Each structure stands twice: as structure tokens, then as C-alpha cells.
Image 1 (spheres, one colour):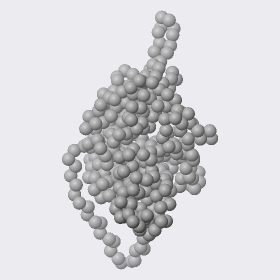
Image 2 (cartoon, one colour):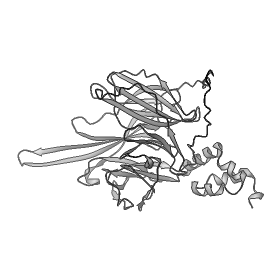
Image 3 (cartoon, rainbow, N blue to C red):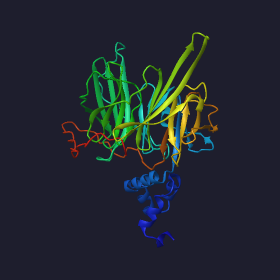
Amino acid sequence: MAECLPLELITLILTKLPVKPLHRFKCVSKTWNSTITSSKFIKQHFHQTLISNTNNKILLISKNTILSSTISTVKLRFDIVNHPLNNIPHCPLIDVSGIVHGVVLLVDSSKKTVCLFNPTNKTTRLVPPAPSQKPASDDFDIAEVLGFGYDSVTDDYKIVKLVEWDVYRETSVYSMRNDSWKSVNDETPVSYTLREINAVAVDEILCFSVISRDRKPVLKCFDLRTSTFSLVDFPELDRGIGVMAMSFRSLRGCLCLVVSYRKHRVDPDKFIGGSFFYADVWEMNQCKWVKLFRIRKNEIRKDCMHLRLVTYSKDMKSVLIEVDGIWFGWYNLVTKKFKRVPVQGLEAVDLPFLAYTYVESLVSVVNNNKVVPKKKGTTPNKTIKKNDFLSSGFKLKL
């Protein structure tokens, strides 16, 4: 039957299928294999996945264990994912420094081992160390943060590394296409100190959290297309109330910020103590912060400390929330009611955990470039100059 259909129609049908059967269908014929593994088809398939809002998964990190689950409003069932950092000795902790197009940037606790990993097709790439002038001495407090994103201008996945110590700092960018690092100038004021919070990629812009000398939080944004920095202010936070935690996520194509507040109050006349808790959810839309909603303590449970958004439901009427890195629940934005979700597969996992979302994709991170040893006296290849691209402005809306 397949021989009776034109290849264009077969390709269209294949783009609507999940990733796992596509891997099996590569064995049908050489034509199917070359079609499914082509970069054009991989992009079409991922674009179709975003349109249909399918193949969405939860990635959960607990110490050096990674688990995955399909998103569901009824029950979450997590399975252990065999990841490349499992083979590294003495690696008690791993971290996710970014997820783009189904590819995860994994970093060990010492930040010496960095790798790209697609948990769907199990492809892996070990990233070479970035050249750095940071001191090895313990006399300096060194802040080091990684970010991971995609540059559509060069069709390249990039890792950005920011390092700060004393009054010095350096920025390096890794290109997956070239499998190499390069240094980038940072002209933002030195009065902003880098906070070791994972960067978030939104619309090909990496957002790092920094803080000014007057303790004001600011976003330091790196445009992957132009390799330039810009600064964006935070929304106006409630003053006089203790901020327990802030977390960032890329949801609905926008940057989302969750600010959890908690403050103890005491009635000296009645000798009664207590506390109140609430969390504000903000979204960056067209370069402006918009407060989406507020969640109060009595809508969750009394002893919660902080919240993190995980994902929205398909009808956009509910949001999945991670509470204290211990359990999950769906919060209905219309009824303001919270429903805890049963979870399986976390019995042997140490708490707390961190939850992320990713989309199953065919993107391969395997390094197919052949490494040719240099001969003495040869001139290194010149770097190909990329097309100039001028950003028309900072925009975080897809």
C-alpha cells in the first residue's frame, strides 16, 4: 500500500506519529529511513508535535536519578531513565541546566562533566570543557551558571556559560554544530552579580538571574542570535513580606515567574503565633510583566513552603504544580481548587525532587563530525563568518 502513496503524503502521515514507532519504521526501507532521519523531517515532526500539543513528558530529577512520566490529570507513573552521567563515579548530584526541543543539558555536581542527552532516542554528546581563566584557589567565591538554547538563524544548539569571581567575569558559548567554544564580550554593568539559578530559554533568549548592589533582582538576557546581553527588570514584588523562593519556567512560549511569600505573624496580646502563605504567578508578555493569578495557602495546604509551575493542561484551564519538591497537584484556574495527583514510581527516590517538562523529539545530539588530527605546519581552518542578524528588540513571546 505504501508503494501506491506518494512520498509527500507518507511523510505527512509520519509527522503525526509518536517518536517510538518512527524508530521502528526506519527499518521499512531505505527511503523511509532517510526521510525520518533527515533534518527537514525532524523539524516538521517537532513542529507538528507543538501544534497538536502531544508527546509531552515530565522529567524528574532526584540527586543522581532521572525519571520520566507522561503528563496526566489522573495519575503520574514515573519510570527510571538510564542517563549518561550514571557511568561517572562519585557523582552524587546531577542538575538540568536547560531543555530545548527534547534535548536535556545535564551537569554533574562539580560542573566538570557536561553532556547533551535526548531521553527519547537515547543519543548523547559529551561537551568538551570550556576554556576558562577562573582561579583554582578557594580565596574567591566563584559563581558559575549554564544555559541551553536554540539559534534558528544558524540552526544550531548552543550552551552559554557565565562565570564570575571577584570583579572578573567571562562568557563562553558552545556551538553543537562546530563542537567548540568561543568567548563573548559582556558589556553589562559589573554592579550586577550572577545568582546560581538555572537559566531559562524563551524565544531564543537565555534569561539569567542577577542581583544589583542594592539587592534588586534583575534578568540578564542573552540573545543567542546576536550574542548580545540586555537587562530586564523584575515585576514589582510585595514589599515588607518575606520572599521564600522564586522559580522560573518557560510555559506557553513565555517566561513565567513564581514568587512564594511566607511571613510569620504574632499577636502579642493573645500570645498566638501563625503564618500566612501565598504565591504570585507572573508572565512576561510583549516585554511586560503580567500577573496571571495568586495561589493562597488555604487553596493548597497549610504547611507548604514554595511552589513551582510544571505545565498547563491541554484546555489551559488548569496548571500542574510541584509543591515543596514532594508532591504534585492540578490547580484549577477557574474554580481556584487544588486536587492532588496520585504518583507511582517514587518509592525509592530521595526527596525533594525537581520537575521539568520536555517534548519527545527525534533530535539527535550524536557528534557525526570526523576529527582530523592536525599536521605540523598546517594552518587551522578559518571560521566561517555567519550572516549578520540585527535584533529588532527584546521579545519573550513566541
